[in-house]
Length: 602
Image (tube, rainbow, N blue to C red):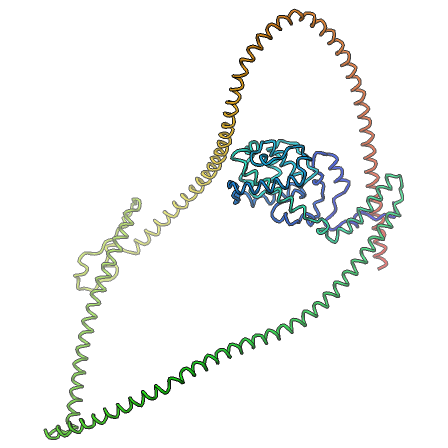
């Protein structure tokens, strides 16, 4: 054993669970699933496509299942389980799955179309156990079906677990059946998803070292069983396999590094080419846009060109018309000048009089405009003052109305406008418009608002507490309603059973009456033979008592032999464990020495 390395060098950084410990935990509780002994260090084995939406039963224990349960506490089932067509579709798929997996042959239970349409409690239990054993073949159902179904669905992280309760599991028929039909269909889909998972595709690179170590442990254990104490051959094979795997891993690393370098250089080259291509594409798009704009401009100019001749002809005609009008105006001007000269006025006198008239007209218009502006300003100021007074009055009315709705206080918060304020000719300050000091009123209002805020917070706390109580009561009412529905269904079934039982009892009572009369006659005959039978029974009792004593003595003897055998087996196991631990310790010491030597050489 001196040439065997310690197990600490063969463990990963997060540690390995002992194989012996896992094996003993399974043997100590054979009723539990063997899947509970799977080490918790391999999450990659559990990351199947189906586990992205639910917690698989192939997990590491109840810790994983309970950790992800909080997300589905308030989820409702969106599937139309009450729809007859949808139920028929689910029933057809479940029936096909059960038939394809030989349900009747394995469970020894009949399967018909009525089984999934009008199931009994036994039908549901057998189908659920069959489906769950497809996920975990080593699991054994030992508790009541209500506890088993609820706990297993919770471990599997069934997303709509809050739609069912334990009391419904005891009566799955009737109005409760759609919810449990959805449960069975969900299990079928999980099984179909899990069946397509290849465990080898989820093995990490470190699992190759695990395989080598496990192979070494098996060969060493076989040698130990055969009575061989020298494990050098097994260690040599272990060391050779590790070196081969390390060499292969190093080659893979070098190859991947070279490929990564070549791909990086190729990526840089393609990146440069891509930027040039992007620039060319951008320029091409810009040129295409310019070409489209130029074509549109050319088409527009061509369309205008055909209209220019008409426009020029129209302009020539307008010029001729203007020339004729200008000649007529010049003739009229000469006639008017001759008429003015005959009256004794000159052109300069007429221009001077016109200019004076224009100046006077402008002055009159300016004075009238100033007078109108002054009147408008006064009217505007009066209107604004009236509006401000009405706005202030309305504001105070609203303020006083709100004050009136406030609870009674020691301070009077109402405010009024000073009377005859509009008829006063003297200028007033802001504090002279109302009958109270606004600053003092503001301070009082701030203090009152703080008191109101404190009371609001108190009421909000009380409201939160009452809301919590309402939530608790609502949950209790919902549970009691569900319980009442279940009891109503049970009552209906019980009434039907009672009616059938009453009819059968009525029919049988007459037959029983005749049978009682016949039995009474037989009883009188039996009483005659009773004494003789008592004597025979006493004799048989004495014989059975003697046989009982003999069997009791034999059981004590067999129990002693079994206890001796158990004690001998336990001693053998303890010796094997001590021997294995000492071997591992020696292996650890030897490997540390070799490691120190290697480090010293380096």
